[in-house]
Amino acid sequence: MRKPASIHPWLSSEGLQSWVNEAHGREEHQRRLAVWLTHIGPFPAHQVATLLGVSKQAVWLWVGQYNRLGPEGLLRRGRGGRHWAYLTLAEEQAFLASLEARTRQGRIATAKQMHGDLCRRVGKKISLGYLYLLLHRHGWRKPEAAPRSRRTAKRSRS
Image (tube, rainbow, N blue to C red; front, side, top):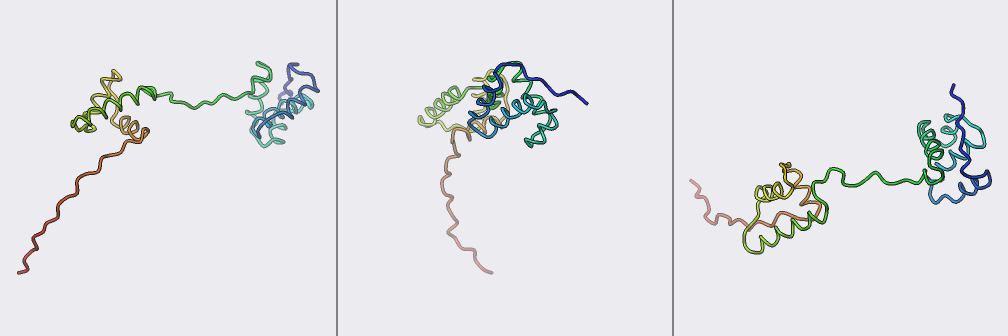
């Protein structure tokens, strides 16, 4: 069995306890508590994980982050964002503004025309699905079609 982790002395025992109590949310408190339990125990990671209801790997991750970077190491930065976007949101809005100007001049933009313009703007071939997601993201909708005329003539019954 692996020996319990040790905590680097970034804070004193009293400072570590007050740091745990100053946590703002449940997740932040849980991460800080894992470090504190490892410090006062020394409990192995699997016992800390059982006490907190998290995985053993999470405890090792949190203790490692604390040991490397100190208390700031446990501050979470979001992983989200538009990692695979071809254009920024501002560039997408500028592209749609140019399309809107074209449609106001009376030139109706079809999806194929928009796709060609977008490919030229991006500088590479992109999928048609990306265009549809872009339109949806900015609230563009298909324009209402003109109502179809109904047949007024009745069929003769023979």
